Image (cartoon, rainbow, N blue to C red; front, side, top):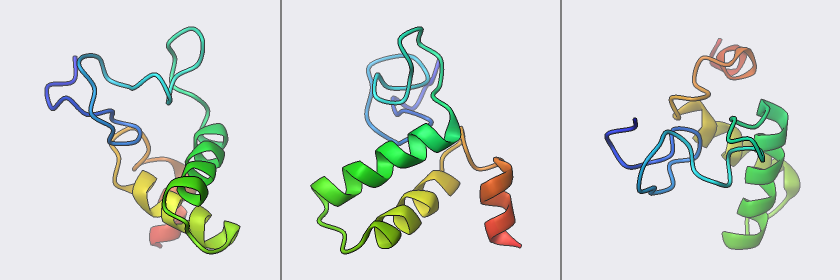
Length: 81
């Protein structure tokens, strides 16, 4: 169980568990990296009025790099080198 009360994939506040309903598939499993990245990018475009798709994607990648579920993902590790 996640003791901080936040989704370890996106940082959203949750009551219990490790991931929020937006970061999991219909079986409760964490979505694939690319799917989560695409959805976070779309969300940023809608909610935060981020300029371009490229800017939204860069912001999503930056946020995901800080999340426990994704910080060791190879694509994010490659960005740090």
